[in-house]
Length: 596
Image 1 (spheres, helix red, strand yellow):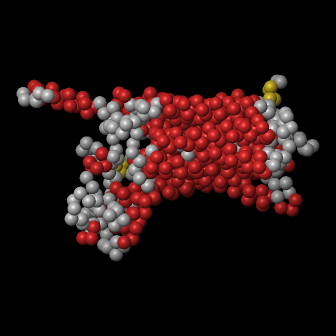
Image 2 (image 1 turned 90 degrees about the vertical axis):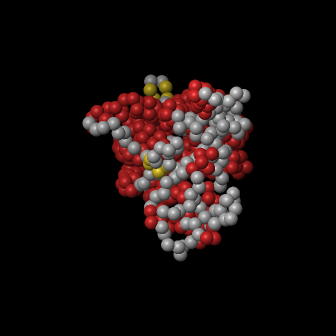
Image 3 (image 1 turned 180 degrees about the horizontal axis):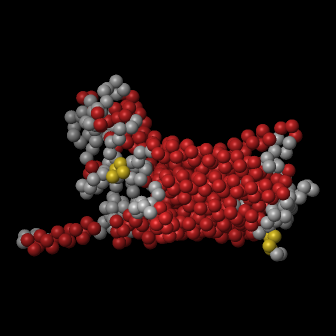
């Protein structure tokens, strides 16, 4: 190879070198073979679209089971309203909690791609088991399972097979979801201005794909299942899940990857242990003299330094270097159980700062979980007829899906410009936390409207033993639409917030924290409902949510939910105002900036 000796040759070689550098991603992502990823051959919207298709089809399969789980539990398993609602809440809670396990394995050991492939295989096994069980022995006698037509009681073994199948399915859907969302965002280089914008948009499109997948299930499949065609519905779900898995595998050679960053529990424990060992040392002022490695070591792993902050100062002791920490061999890394870097300490601080906000998001899911359980039960006790057509109560969630999708698509192009024009302020859109607060306020209004609709339903109810009312099911439309708008505010902003406020190596864990708050919220909702039933069924009373809703007061439970959501909003506002965002060191010599 000829050397560049002249000035002009130097310029040519420099431009060639620059073009070669720009051919690779700058964020440290790798290709399938573990080599630096080439932009034109990997990632981008080609891979992002495959993952969106995977999410849409997988969620179509999930929603086909989820949307009528309450009806299936009542008609096929012969459960009461409260039992069916609790069965659904616990199943959903397990699904979302499994996301924490999937995120841990994804960030620590398996990587995001392998986590998605492994657990989505479990979802297929679970759906096939559910389909076989339903076809073979759950629907007895023939023709049972429709609204008002109960199936025969099942043996403990048959019931166990049903629960094993749905919980395998929950594991296969929940565990890979945070990894899938993060893996999709990984396909865009955040150091490239154009791709960085696409990366921000991916989370919105991810939630749209999730909702569009639900749309078919909550209109077509839900009608088939309401008519008793459970076997057909579940087999369609299984087929869509297999197609989703194929879509994921089809991009295997083109995806961009990041190396797993190791066990976060170990890294967090190291900070705690190291700080306790040095508990008697005097704290340096403003973080001066604390241990940190060169920025190139972080860039090599596709991560960044986190700048020092002054809160949780007792943890800074873990980064104080003493004579016992100094090694004679420069190539030998210090013992991390005695000495941690500033970035490692700040990782722990980031998680601690997120905890109050995360705790506030737990109760925010109380309204959304009721949309899939008690709203459906309320709709089943209303007039579902339109001419000669009977509307499946669960299909009313289509109003939620359409309003959520429309709001997300219109948010940046219409709603934000209109907001800036009306507010007469400089172009500054609401932050993630502000959007979550707005969503919680809207959810509170939605639950109040649900209570008012229930009062009106009872006014026109039949009290002759039948669980019916002459009030049209379309009276539920406002509560579904408002919850859809609330979802668009809360869930997308919540996902963006947790992804942006967590270190690069723990992105899946950040998304999982967002999802796990929904999981714990379902358990809290189930617990509140159980306590309410215990308190309101004393002295032979039917309770607020009895088997026949016409004998109870579901409206009072909706008003209670609105009160809890409003109180949660107040606590959330306090936590959001006190929150300090993460501060990352910019690459290529740029100044640091907080991420908000």
